[in-house]
Length: 209
Image (cartoon, rainbow, N blue to C red; front, side, top):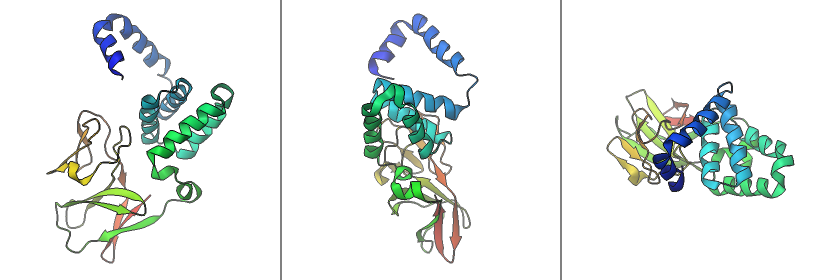
């Protein structure tokens, strides 16, 4: 929420509480993906960039595909108009989300070679770049590996390696914190890091997206 809305909630929570209860009640029969996708469209209609980024991230976390986002925007053309759809698309492009890249939209998921496993100690974490995607790789045990997207699930901020202290990864934008060993969010937020399927083949760690 904006600073102004936070202020109003504190100053007149008795009044705004009814509004938030109304919104919650209105969406109780919708699945989370649909509810957040509708919120994406309302933020585009109001041209609220911060809210658009936030609800776009939520919709993607709830299983919404990039094509579904684009279809929703285009289906809302009668109320949004071309200018607002272009506005939203410009923001998506500026966010540089890998799943919205033309190559990702055109083809199925694939296995990508991330790194060589030799010399990577148990308990170690590294941030690497692989085929245009930032990743955090954590070796849990001799046979278990975790590969996470480097983007914060809140507003898709690309988290740098310097944000890792011990086993705690902190997003520099809004201080969401994650346990790199599990990917769980342990402070500020409530969504885990995106984890990609992985496997080791002939001494090479592969990840799928």
